[in-house]
Length: 124
View 1 (cartoon, rainbow, N blue to C red):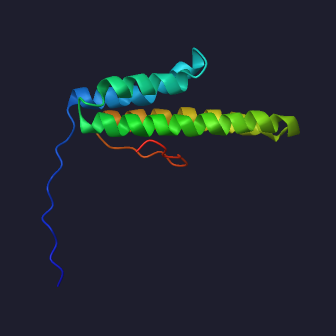
View 2: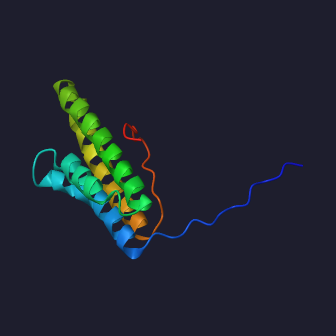
View 3: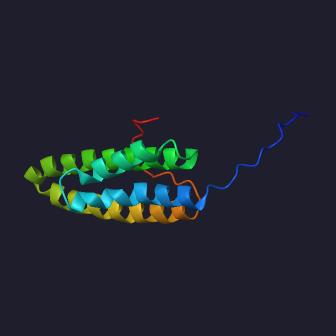
């Protein structure tokens, strides 16, 4: 029989860490205020708070990676607007980005690590 290593319980993140992780996800909505705010908001929050807690660090990276993926997908959609399908793709990318960021923020505030689907993870 294989012997399993004892499982070490991972402590739940503090309320402050959960709140900052949630803010990292919700900072993407700055993209509605100014251009590339969806990238700048999570990047600044992550850089400032990544040393506070490993949970904030992981969720900040996840939020930033997802917003990079959303930005790339949106730029491709804009290019595809020349052949009309880009209008529908841009709408889908925007709606998916909003919905998934809200879900991620809620999960982070509950202390659950959230992994975005369809995300290109450039920052490790």
